[in-house]
Length: 168
Image (cartoon, rainbow, N blue to C red):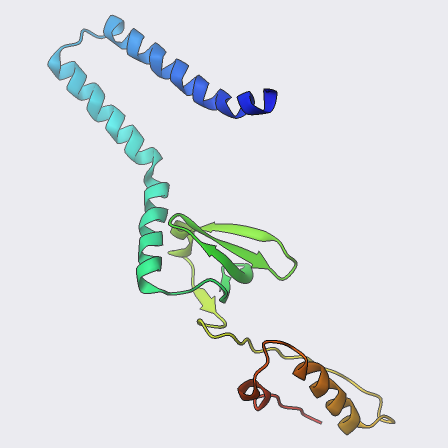
């Protein structure tokens, strides 16, 4: 039962503080129309400033959905973070890096950074791999073995096979 109650503690604290304010304000301030309007205006201003970043991220998410700048499955570089987009929400995107770390980036942060999209919605990604062989070994045999390994990948198509280059 403890695990069901603990998440509700911050909400309970907020309700207690709100109830105390609602009780104390009429005692401290005479509830005239001007006082209540001034208090309401100050409250709206404070709430607006506190939700500024959230609203910025929500607006960024709406623009992202409509513009289609990046999609789930794209490999992107945002600031110092590089990874595959796993989820696009209205508030943030979730990246999974090469070392399998999940990073949540709010859309508001993305607006201020350049986005480098490596795939742009295509199912392929350029991969540069350097292999070095001993001069005594046959480079053509190593090339043949590496091509056979590459052909076994499920996402490799005939079109992608023509893009494979080997420099000897």
